[in-house]
Length: 259
Ligand code: SF4
Image: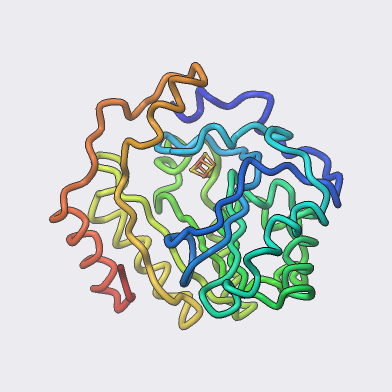
């Protein structure tokens, strides 16, 4: 059903840095990277994940139009606190849709505030930026949504291979990775699929710091309805504690650190 939601917005736009489109910001997030995070949620995503809880970020060119300085001004009041408490995460949507703006934003966050930076991405567009783009990124929070190419396509509406290529590129760049895997009953909880992903991740070596198994939830369901989309997972329940523990044990069986 993810494929059904592909529309004119699935093509990345021409960048117009240093102006970007922000869906929103959050100043006290505790789940989007180490410590307390200031999070920029960038607008635009070319995926249509069936379990997306932020379909309101999909529209490319949606949200608030901001200059680089305006975006930095939103972070400025928190910089001293974040210096010792955590850092900044750029999320979305998919941040690489606005790669030029986000790249400049990351560089300025480093240069002006010297804060820890994390990039929350599914990596599909990584080939659009050069290696130096990642110099200002301390940690990549990488979403790999499935290990089976056909199921990945059905789940997201896009191809898996660019994301796998991106993970290997990050390993070559010695860039730290925090892997995120959303556990959805009936969609992403097959043992063989998880073990295939775990094998791939184990091959990345020490750059992979941790695998976070994130339980699917229904908190974004109302947004699909508000936006007039059919929500394909309307009747899917969150995974049980046992199922979450089991998925974590599969990753751990390949000597991966899980949470
Ligand atoms: S990549 Fe993220 S923002 Fe884009 S559709 Fe999937 S879950 Fe939603």
